[in-house]
Image (cartoon, rainbow, N blue to C red; front, top):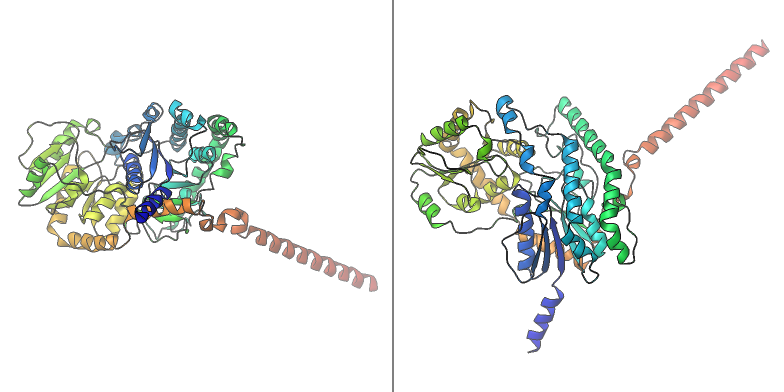
Length: 512
């Protein structure tokens, strides 16, 4: 009886109240990551309040969801993808960085000022042990941690880059660590290093421009709730560097061996769940004598955005293959070849897990890249947007991927040539199996996520992980104060020597 009581008390003591915030609407990657965090915390027995713009189908007694899908009024990720320009010019989607940063700020502000979120903050009975925040190009929502007077953890959806690492340590070295959307992989050329610096300068200038507006909105959104609790709201610029930890959707195999602070924990793949296939897809994949090619361009590149001639060209090309093709497409096409199966929703992870899946044609999103490594399936990348170019370039460099440029006229032909090469050449399959074994040689990422979240609560914010780099001014890191001192000493030495020499010359002239 005593042991039962002890176990019950231990379980109760380890049940934390955690607020998880993933406010970005549209696009699947952030909501998949958010749901993954929630799922693992619930499985560990914690009470979770989940603020999300994409409500989850998860149902659990310890889960409370706050729907902020109204955020779509100010931001729709699909609008960023100018597919017409990419198809016409073969260029990466170009977008106004200033406008995107402002849109993300509006998403954060809409989230904080949403009536249900305000109700949560203004209820003095509400308490949390930890806040977990999705980083979306700004740090506005750290105000939630201030309201509830508890530690917070960042979640970064990309490979580690300067903007996120500077929140817990310092900016990465741009000479060999690319910024989030930089295409090239190191070693960089001189021109690429210059472009890197220019990109970083633009990013910092844009963030600086938004600072005053961000502070005003921050005070309006969180000031009343903090005041109601008898405290004063600190400056956003001070609070945003107070994170206890950063959980990164990253792995050295999808990124690079970058030096990382102790407060950064890579947990790529924590979102993956191995589920059985629906009966119809199971039958299709089981019966595929020549294997299956899975084709999905994610949620950004939808069928409605693709020209009809391109869709028909791709359909004809896929129909000419020996393999069975499962194509995720949001509309029904006519005259579909027998070997092609079009589905509007694809259980991607379950398809990749099937032993008959030979190749994954993908846009190169980081979640898809991680899933391909997890299930040991080579990828053929057709990048369109953001970090996809970088992800695919790295995968090609590591030997488990091919790449094709998205273009209107050449895409069907180039895809077929690349498919034939990758399916016919065993080196891709062998390489991805080798890398997949390395990928799995670690502690389960979901267990890692839960462990560190609990560690932050148990250690009252994990101050022992805090990097001293946050306390050192930028000019000291670059030794500019030393350079200034040396310059002054040299200047004074030259000045004194010149004065002495001048006096000596004057004395000599007088003696003559």
